[in-house]
Figure (cartoon, rainbow, N blue to C red):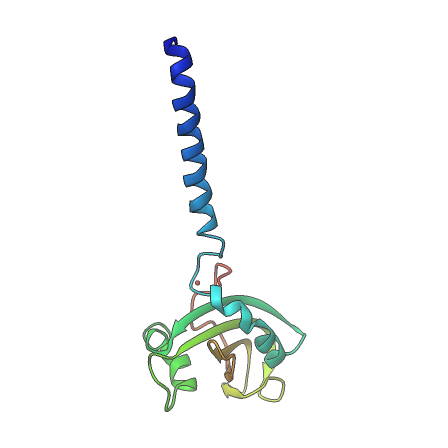
Length: 144
């Protein structure tokens, strides 16, 4: 057998191994890769809380303890009596909101941003907090 013929099986084996590794890496990342991945199940609850005349700005997932650090005003509005370890989903909407137009209103009487907070994984609505401006960075569409 010549050196060329001996090299083909090992090159083929190396190619198969490389393809297997590459496939394994991509299948392990079938989610969106953000802190809000598990929060996409919260979207129906969130949209129902703010109504149809709004535009979603982003989705984030947190524990209440993390939320206290990154958005203290939001944390104070929804956290009384809750465990800091509780998982929550935070969905931001842009539009025109008043206490009369959202479910479980908290925060300002009116504003251009409504942040819906629900328990994760139960999707229990904890509150819809109305703000003038975002308490978190929703600049990139998150879902983190």
